[in-house]
Amino acid sequence: MDGIATGSIYAAVALALVLIFRSTGIVNFAQGEMAMFSTFVAWALYEAGVPLGLAVLSTLVLSFVAGMAIERALIRHFEGGEPLTLVIVTLGMFILLNGLAGWIWGFENRGFPSLFSDDAVTVGGVRLSVESLGIVAVLLAVVGLLFLLFQRTKIGLAMRAAALNPESSALLGVRVGTMLMLGWGLAAALGALAGVLVAPRLFLDVNLMGSVLIYAFAAAALGGFDSALGAVVGGWVIGVSENLAGTYVDFIGADLKILVPLGIIFVVLLVRPAGLFGTREVARA
Amino acid sequence: MTRPRVRIAVICALAALAVAIPFMFGPYRVGQFTLVLVYAVVALGLNLLVGYNGQISLGHGAFFALGAYSAALLIEKADVPHLLAVPAAGAVCFAAGYLFGIPALRLRGLYLALVTLGLAIAFPQLIKRFDGLTEGTQGLTVIQPVAPSWLGLADDQFLYLLVLAFAALMFLGAWNLVRGQLGRAVTAVRDAEIPAATLGVDLGATKTRVFAVSAAYAGVAGALYVFAIGFVAPEAFTLTLSFGFLAAIVVGGLATISGAIFGALFIEFVPVYASDVNDALTGVIYGGVLIAFMWFLPEGAAGLFQRVRGLMDRHRDRRAWASEEKDLTPEGGAA
Image 1 (spheres, rainbow over the protein chains, first blue to last red):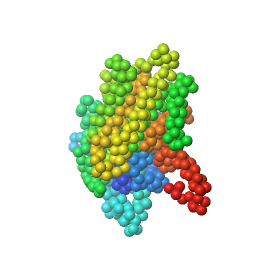
Image 2 (image 1 turned 45 degrees about the vertical axis):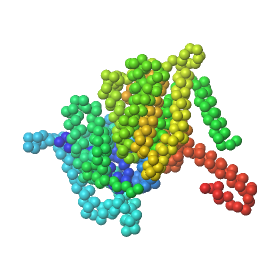
Image 3 (image 1 turned 90 degrees about the vertical axis):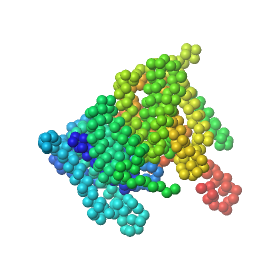
Image 4 (image 1 turned 30 degrees about the horizontal axis):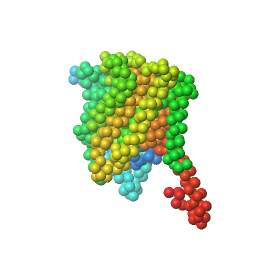
């Protein structure tokens, strides 16, 4: 269950990656650092005396706006360019945000309060912490909301159209630019949520999301970079296997846990590059 | 003077400057310039891969570390002479790069970036895990090369010149490679895979070879790093280092040979001065510079010089033209 809870956090970040990949074809290396930055904002608000719930909520809103602003001000300039350029730009954002957070909040560890109580409940003879259950519930709620947004609302339809075929959508009156901004905003808010959920389990510092990002990449690769369902399933598989491998395989232990997602990325990309739920990329020469 | 002569003159002047450096500065500065040369060799190799071949590696810190540890272990545990340890480290990394490259290079752009990023993160952990061999976090102290007494040089000067000699060899090698058959195949693969394949370029083999050569450059640089520092520990090979190498080639200029030097100067000296202000400033500058260069100057510092030179040439052409045919507008020069 602990693995599923951690996996849900990976799944949230993986979902954010998928959102951006689907709308703009960019793998956003800065996703983790954006989330870390947001988490620091929530922490700063909380320290300033804002109640935790309100602090988290306003952070989500702020992150949403900031994500839209990043897309409009920075990413728009490079869209449709070489993958190399985009990788370098998002990596630049990665390093920049990491540095900025270090500058503003320093490099020491900080405790971050959990949104959930630290009680445990017993279900069918198994003790489950309220926190783990809460994390899984939040993830499921988010997935449900995203599903409703994309499948049942006009905005969701427009976002899917803009991602699928920007030119035709623009001709049909879809504001493609706005849709891309929305995609980035949603991803940033989702990342912030993941950050707030993971911070109480680790410590809040500038490297909070470093390893989470790798696990999320593994989750997205496993599930398929363009599949939301895949991201969730992938996140869970990664979370559980990381836990099991770290505990039961002596050689791996706590130090080499990081090799688990790497191995998974490697194997998946070689055996089934589209991932479990992804669509195969077909190129026309 | 004609263009090739100017170029030869500039190269000779730079070479003279490079040789003169150890006699112009104190030991501390000379040590810094030695590291600049080391980083330049990595940047050169990385640029062969990223700039010329269009593949992305965020994991060159790992090959750099592998080279450094290979050299350190050979020197300390197997009593291999220093000079032999350098090609040996290069060979180890060539083999590692080749093996890593065979599966990895089936992956396109973004995925390769992912896998190599993972490599950079995992490698220090691996070093710590095999602490029986690598002494783990304690690190390994390695005897540095000592200046032979008949040369009459101080150790730091000798070290610098030794590294300079290796770096010069590596630069010559890269220059040759880029202009040769493999070099043309490499850029062809970057610019147009399918036409290149149609013309008989083996895509997989070309990519794997470039990856291996690029890793070998990082390995040689790793060995030279051990010469310069005399110590290796896993903490030296952080993710920041790998990102720094990438920043170096972006700043220096993608797909240029001379850019490696600008880039190396940048990543050696910026952190030194930035950390005086704030520990986080280096990251802010690296990140900001990466974005700013991609936005304003995607061809990097070396490209800037080329651009300026092009403008000057054009200006000269225009004046020559204008004096010959006064009634023609000199549009042709603007292409």
